[in-house]
Amino acid sequence: MTTRLLADLDQLSEEQELQLYKKWETTPEATRRDAVALREWLQKQPHLPKLTEDEDEWLCRYLLACKNSLERAKRRIEYFFTVQAMWPEYFTPPTVAEGLAFGEYMWGAPLPKMLPDGTRLCFYKFAPKVGKDASGMNWMMFYMLSLGYIELQLSQPGQPLHIEAVFDVEHYTLSLNNSFIAHLAEFRRFVQCIQVALPLHVRRIHVMNAPPLAVTALNKLVRPFLQDKINQRIVTHDGLDSLAKAVPVECLPKDLGGLLPLTMQEYTLRWADMAQAATKWFMDRRWMKADLTNKPDCKFNSEFGLDGSFRKLAVD
Image 1 (cartoon, rainbow, N blue to C red):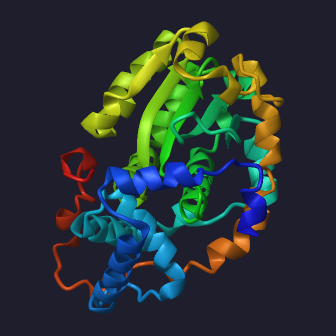
Image 2: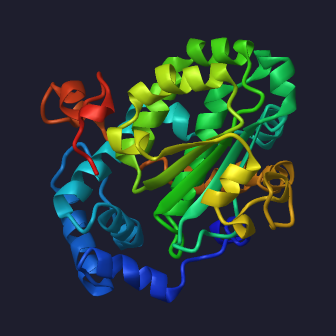
């Protein structure tokens, strides 16, 4: 099933995968041995699930994302199991009907062609309908779909650990801004999941066609929740010409000035059946969460930073 879902996405070449190991001064064999060590460590944690050899590839990807550091990998894996238990609503696949309905308000999908350095490019655009009436905008659906895709991709061999995102915010209005503010707590948790729980590196975030209201929202509502290193990777563009200077046109949809054969809306529709196709995959992973009743100490939130901004956490 997951193979079919990702069939349209190109994969890292063998050379690109080996470059990841070389970058962090390790080898596939050494990483697999470290994955076994992580499994043994998990066996000793009363509040964490016990993994089998079937999850070794998943553990290897955490090790690579954590720069071949066992200690960093342990922390990030524990964060992953923790947010799965604390906020399960973020990791529940929507129905096809819900996904299609959301597509009327926001377009978004991973793009099939990776950037030359092996980075996956994703795009998001507020659809024209949301600019006219933001009352139906479902922010949780955006967060659920985004986390679901990322989690699915990062569990698969051959898929990159690095992403870049393009946000076209042309239709960002006062009504949409008020809706975003009303659901700011949901956004904060979404950012926390991205920044400390998933084996993911955000290379750059491109924001384009931003009206003044969207720029204000970016600076006052979004940036305060982001780690400094991610804030420094946000690039703004006033149009397609500026974007084309930063992202190869062969990797962009045709309505973003690119050479890919489909439009943003068409790529969104191509992924519209993801919820239905991925339901069993996600349900089979429901056990992969922490048992918070068995946490060894009672200072859980302060220890994990879940009561404050994750910017203070030294997680790379």
